Image (cartoon, rainbow, N blue to C red; front, side, top):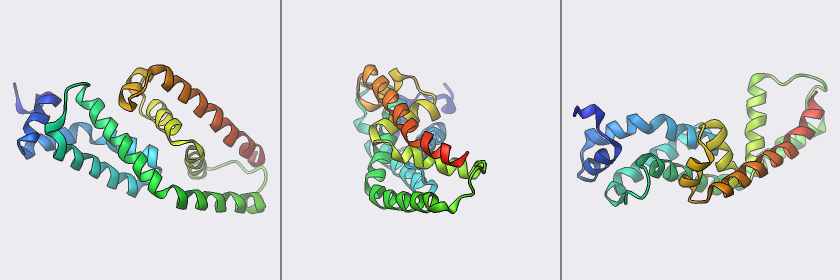
Length: 188
């Protein structure tokens, strides 16, 4: 079997033996999904970049402790979600105050009434809407909508039942509606 076609479990075994080439292969295979997950959960490019690096550092350090209770990719994405949620917890208070300040300015008449949101503004608006969600709902929503994972895959990553994921997704949608609808009415 060629070096580039090694399975994730074999790569982890080699990483545990400090094989840097195996580590590079694992990073190349999973870096986009890990970064996307971190970026969508955290909402800040630089913090997401740092979190993704931390994810791979943790993988390198703990490769030998993988217990084969799930797929390697599930284990990796669980680390990414946990690292992202930890980053969110650390920065939540400052981001919440910043978002609140921005909303107060908008509500005070900083925006032209009836003007359609431009793409950049819409992205910022959606990021604020995601920040409005409780972290467990946000994690389920991002993994489902942005990363395209099924409720079963999300359940495995988050360590909960598929029914719990379905409930979190439903609540996330309801909470997003509570946030988005009143603000869109003001804009349009």
